[in-house]
Image (cartoon, rainbow, N blue to C red; front, side, top):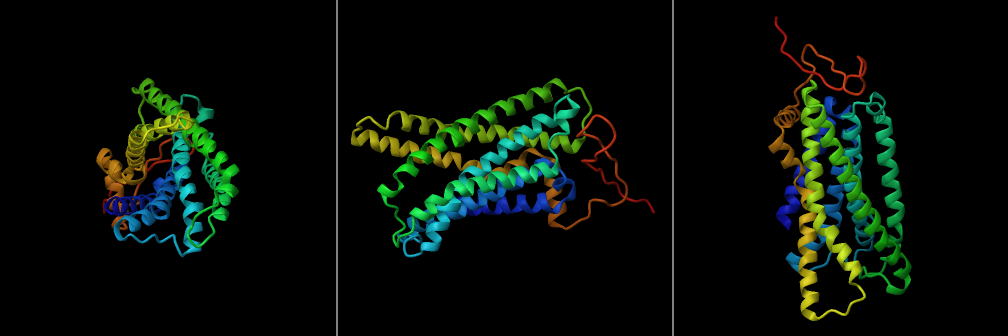
Length: 308
């Protein structure tokens, strides 16, 4: 687990750096959603996985004896669970709109609207998570079952309906619609950058859907069988499959950067450019319209060397 945390931390930090460092990427509304996803994944790893990893390695629970860390874990751990997948869902909607034939659709998501949506969802999730930060307040970082009973029912159904069913439906629907748009316009010339971004996003949507599906299925099963009296063997089997599904679902929080590096030569060049602090606007640029159907908004540039 420690190795996965290190790999995920490095990957998410590099993604954040590249998407912020390169102007050509940070000017795209889709990048705002992806940066929100990377930040959420990073916070999730360090607020929820690191304490568990320390406990497994040393037998010492870092949450016990530290009320502040305990509150941070329950506030930002649950926030980090919801925020990345929400941002990926927003990115899937953005890709559907960008690849649409309808000019009005392609203009809908702007940088300002992307910022507003990410900030709004972030604040809503923080507000939803505040009760747990209040309930988990004792020295041993344990909440009273009686005090938390009503909130526990709420968060259980919230996770089932919003985090699982709604998110999976949105991602699956708009991922397929994006794929259909790309297939139906495959003969149309596209900006190379946007082509690479679309390729990266479609693969990420597929990866997110597949890796989240086991945990989604297990949550449905858990709710459907919670009133059934189970044997010790079945409880052990349920615990095993729960652990497996959680580990699989964490793939999207750990492997995004490495998936980008594998599937996109353009992203590999962008990483080298960002890490070497090279300038992209070397000499001349070719402006390519992608947001609307006529010359106007620039979303990509192709840099060429200057001839003296």
